[in-house]
Structure formats: structure tokens, C-alpha cells
Image (cartoon, rainbow, N blue to C red; front, side, top):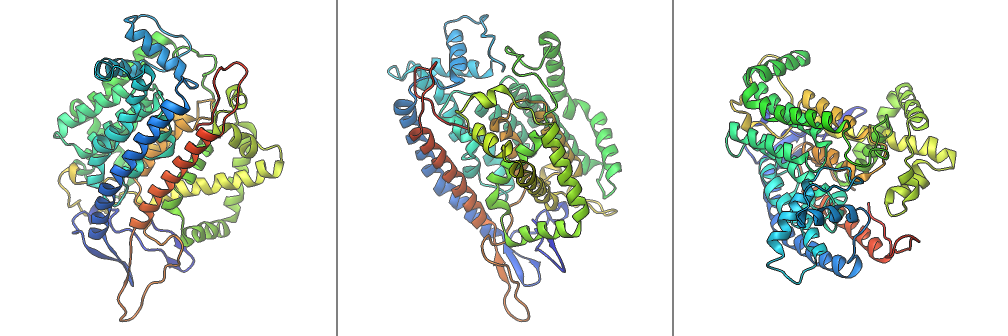
Length: 531
């Protein structure tokens, strides 16, 4: 990541452009007096993941056993709907459907399969535990080893699988029987196949389309992420075959031409999903199954600021540095008129485009209840209309600024030195970067509910494509001069802080979940707080 300051420029990541792909791993000078040892960073990344994974695995196994046996050995919140429908399938009643369920039956079919595999082996295990094991196995085995590991091999200094498997919004549901874990696994596996092409181009893209289609059986809005992955698939072919340049509009045209020319190989696997989804919409007359009255679409623009704020919070180890804060301060000073206009727009959005769903104010079992009531919609006006807009503004700046230096760059004339899309770095161009933002908007803005679970995929898709800042978090970066040996900076420390940050949040939320209990008059068991 690079940030500009007055009179100086922070060190650039030299590994973020297609033209740098040919450079060998090793020590690289990235600015006068500053270097990075990428080979050492890769080795340390592999080492930490190999050591940390068994420890994190043990943590989740032990806490899962404790939570499901001692803390909530009963159906918790929405589990009663998901488990009830799965039990209906286990009984063989495949035509019966609970009208209160709003998502497709993917999880229930997976639960049915797992039940018939696990129950004969562990006969004493309760049905509740067996069904919860579906998400635990998916989150701590399939997600890091099958989905993230191939991407990590392509971008070992970008992220760590052991950290992503600990992402708090997702890790919460390793203990429960919800749709979010496998919805994420299938659509992220589609992305992984599309970028790494492990089975060759044609087979991998068809498998990617199949995985993306299956993900829609867990959450309907994944059809939107189908579109994002399709853009990536076509774009990475067009970059090579049509030779992208710095002329942005021409690149869009090249993308379109590539999609037409290679329709059967690149587009058709995803086009089938779009056709199937269109048929579903005609049949259901809505994107929501079941309880449509409480999940009607609207224009909830402030959702984007909720999302950016959550991304800001979870990515603190990635962006936090003196130089980054300084760059934001200078940006506001140099563009004070534009900054005031942006803050005014945010205030207008807060005032006129905030949807307050009845579930949000009625259910104190979610952190959003407290965050919204005490911060985002605080009765104290200075908090709501001064502090919160400033937070939203900085969160938006952070989201954009972390992506900016990670955008794939092209030469206006010179051809790419890369001959195969498999050799392209795990990065977005200006086209896929725009597609990512559009998909985020289309996914979360129509939703009336303020649900952190909706930000799992936006965070992961964003995080996979950004390279961690290599600047020190706490100390000031001072380059050497003259004959002094250059200082070496590394992103390894930040990636380690990211892992520890996620683990700390998980431990904190688990303690709150276990210790902080309260009663509801119409619920027989103790209630607790989750994301």
C-alpha cells in the first residue's frame, strides 16, 4: 500500500503490477534506503500457518465441544427454523417447507447428507451436534485447506488462510447451524478455481460456475457474486488475448469482445446460473423465499457505510500506521471543500436513507442492536450527525485507499510479458475493481436488515485482493541515506497482528456469549449475544 504525503511518498509495493511478475523473489529495493525481502516473508508466512493452524484448529474443536454441550445444548435463535427443516428432510418429507424460512434448501440437504454419514458412526451424538458439525468442518477444514490454500500459494504475502478462517463474522457460525458458512465456502471456491485454474482452463472455469451455482442454493444473493467472478474470468483472458493498456474505455470494449468470442468456454458456465435464477424469480415472484413481508427490498443506502465501518474495524492491522493517518489528514486539508461536501452527503444519507427494521430494535441478542442504538442512531445529535459521519468518511477512504495501490497496472504501448492468464497476479483491474463495488452495492443496499453476516463476502472478496501494508504499525518509518545499509520492512508482522486481532475478537465474543445471559419471557432458555 502506498499513501502520499506532502513532499514525500510512502514506499510502493513493487509486487502489485502485472509487469513486475517476472521479478524473482528476494530482496527488492522499493524506495531509497528501504527494501523488502519477499522470499523471507513467504517463508515466514508458510511457517506461521503450519504452526498456527493446529493450534487454531484445537481452539475451535475445544470451544465447539464446550459451547454445544454446556452453553447452548438447545436450538439458538434461527437454528429452530434450519434444524426443523433439516429434520423434515431426514424424515423423508421432501415436499414440506417451513414458510418462515427465507433461504433455499442447500444447508438442509447438506445436513441430511452429514446426518446419514455421521449418525451410524457416532450413535450417542445428539442430532443438534451432528448438524452443527456441518459448519465446524466446513469452517476449519474445507475453507482454509480447500478454498484458501490454492489462493495463498499464488499470493503468499497477501493474506494467511489461518487468519481468514478466524474472521470473526464467519467464525461465530462454526458453533451454530446457519447458512452463512457453506454459502461462503462455495462462492469462494468458485473464486479460487477461477483464479488458480487447477484443472486447466476449461474444466476449472466450468467447475467454478458449478460451485457458484451451488452457492445460490445456500443464499440467493450469491447470484450477484456470480457476476463478479464472471467478470474476473473474462477479464483475465482479455488482459492476455487483447492486451489491456492504460486506455480504460478500450479495456471495457476488449472485455466485451472477449466475452462474445469465448462465450462457450468463459461465459456459458455462469450464464446457465443466471438463466436458472431468472426461472426461480418467475416461479417465486421474489428473491426471498417464505417470509417476504419482513424481507422486502428497499433503498437502504446507509448499508454501504455500515459495511465500510465493519471493514475498517476488522482490517485495523492492515491499514494502521502513522503515514496512513497522515495521508488522510492531508487529503482532508488539501481538499477541504470536497471533504465537507462528502460529509454533507453522508449526513443526508443518514437522515433520509436509513431503514430501521423492527427486528433490529426488538432483538437484543445481536451486537447490531447495541451498535445501532448507541452509536449509529444515537439520540445525542452530535454523535449521530458529527462523529458517525466522520467515521463513515474515514472508513470509505480506507476501503478505497487500500485498493488503489493494489490495482493491476498496464503500459500504454508495451505488451505484457505474460502469455497465460494463470501467470497473472491475484489482483483486480479498474474493471473488476468497479465490478466489486457494484456487487457490494447490489448485494447489501436493498436489504432492510442491518446484519453483519451480510458483510462476510464483501470483506473476503475485498481482503483477498489487497496486499498488506509493509510499514511499521507503531514506529515511524525513516529511510537510511548515504552509505548506510537500507532498512528492511515486512508485512509479516501485520499479518501476524491480523491473526491475533481476529483471535482476540473471537475470544471476546465467546466470553460475552458464555457469560452474559438474560431471559426472554417467551423463550424457555437463556438468551445470549452473537453477531
